[in-house]
Image 1: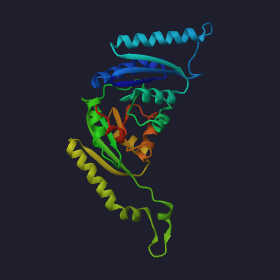
Image 2: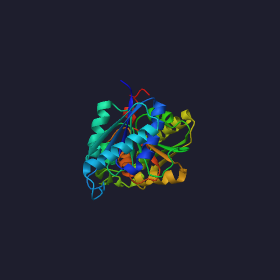
Image 3: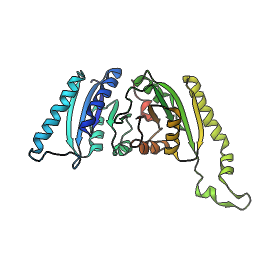
Image 4: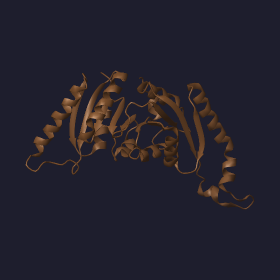
Length: 278
């Protein structure tokens, strides 16, 4: 069975950008493409004097023409109504898609809750041929598998890495100890300094092994804001998250930023990346 990518389209106007980038990625992975268009009720404007079937047929013809113009040989087109996330999960599981490529949509955060497949989000009018990438690995796990995958997807990109160690004292930690007195965040961080330093050393070893610059910090503004600030400092035109799994703080940050960045975003879960044979 031929390996496949799933292109997820929710806006016909963004289809040319989406299909163009998907073709580029499919060439690099030597994979076929299945385009899934989902018409969300209430978002698709129908001309007054035309019936729904006629309009949906026009959409099908338009998308087929775009697929042919891109020179895709192994492609398929599926059209559904509503439930964007459920259709994406169903089709990507059915085909065991290597990658989901989607135009930016507010529901994509929910997709990350249901699927751990790599997700490449195309932002309207962004630079889809990036030259600089910001790679954000999790504080746990091995960052190398995801990084090796994204280097294959974007071989011309120059990379730098950023790790944000978020420290949240628990309610028990914050209580007043009868001997130690008030346990301030500074004291708690000092007590955790060995774990923080070990995490920093692993991150720096990864950056050295890959030959890329890296920046490690203890975040203070929340993961979303810290990563956004790092993205702006770096000047990168591609943002890559590499959470260990769907439950980590980094994964939550990725869900929040998917709909709010003005550069393309790739989310690659380390667990799945380690099992992919690309």
